[in-house]
Length: 173
Image (cartoon, rainbow, N blue to C red):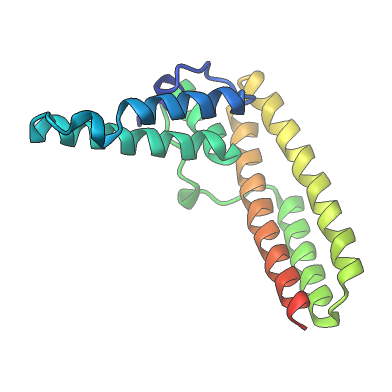
């Protein structure tokens, strides 16, 4: 795995300066713009295009908190995180997931936008708690807790997508 932090010359830390990330991205993309390589040979043009793709991939990783945390874990431990190969061992969180999904289904069936807004706020708070736990686990180099927090955050992100889908559905009615 390519180190996305190194590509942008950023420290390997969970809390990154997104403004600095954006400015470095623009600088790198400008330097690799195809117009700069019009007179170059095809191998050099391909290398520039490949580097631009690598930069885009690194940007995607660093902008997403789950992927950013997983990159840190991989860099620090040498083990890539594969969410497909794991299952959450936190039974309490599995039960919470089921409750949240059932609650969202109920809200959608009742077409209750006020309840949906309150539910979305609760999920937002849960997301903030998980992000704080994740940051602390990464800082403390507690890779097991960091990995569990990534799993939880991944679920929350999917749940937020479902909340958005229900909101869209309610506005259509």
